Length: 83
Image (cartoon, rainbow, N blue to C red; front, side, top):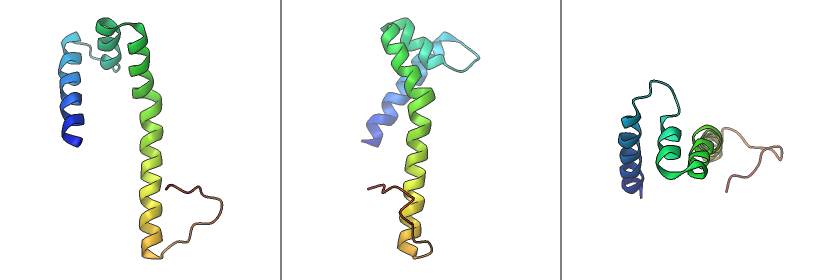
């Protein structure tokens, strides 16, 4: 699964580089130009909104798992379950 995701990401980055933009958002520009406005909007949403929240959630989940296995911290009812 990771190999497929890495291959798609590499191809997307290579095609996005053809736009020769020196600023952020080249993936959005590529998607909007070649696949339409809706696809550009979805790619922009994924790049700037969804991915940071998803990575933060995964990081907190990993920290909670490590802390629970080590017995170092017992999480209270304040924290959400990440299962």
